Length: 380
Image 1 (cartoon, rainbow, N blue to C red):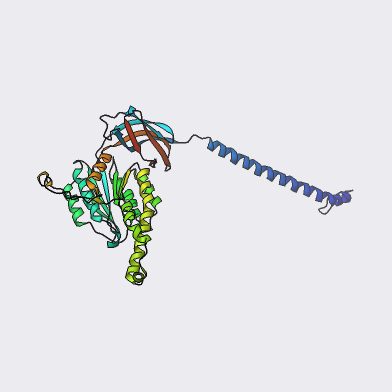
Image 2 (cartoon, rainbow, N blue to C red):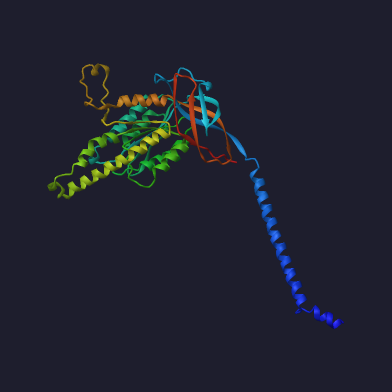
């Protein structure tokens, strides 16, 4: 009897094989069930974390806006109830409206050569006339760009120091690092001042460095929350130079290597001017600024005393734009800037771009504002 039982349950017997197979299948089922339970637990934990309330913090946002009366002048008075601010299409609470001293950054294009027919001295002359007309508490900084970006003057309200800087540090060069200059200004210079940040860019819009794309410069200006005003010579130069480019030189002139090279450089320059016009307009519109881009030349007539002016003949060329008119309009635009403080709730470390709009509640007001702002990162 013992022998028969031993034989029936020996490792090699059919019965033992069947039992082993059953155990293995049971283990597989248990393992599969365990993996399923782990997956369900993970999904439950994830769902539970998704339902956890997002940590928000309240931030006071400073937004620079241009507010004028319908007559183009500064409003006699302005109250928080006169404006509505929305961010991400949600109305925000305005805490204050301030008209602080201006911080004006002048960016002067000193690039080009004799073939470009660009008047870079116009940029220096217009810059100085702006500086002379500012209030004493307003601060000014000056940057020039050509082959490289140069800080001509840091932030100061010392008019004599600014005049000396324009006279002694204004250096021309053949290349144009426009977008590098805008990025440098937004990253390194504008953050050094608080309150209103206004940029006046005197340029032809051409960029030849190909190092920094326009999108990077625009984003940097948005992050600096600066308003950009552009005085451009692009339309005038295209108007004057394009007929020369479209009309090829006679064959006997094209044989001359120097003449042919000059013609090719002129073609390239016109292409650069045309390519730069749209970015300049976008830069001004996106930041809540304005652009002046005429087909006629801008001329700064010599300023005479009232007595001498009564006897002098008009020195302005026919059809030219008086730079005094542009200066006055720039001062009017910069003078109409206010800083609105409003409250916004954001996630911690939010660096997204948020569209903003400002609406007047009074029929006698007009408002211009940047397209949006980048949220600042809160330091824990």
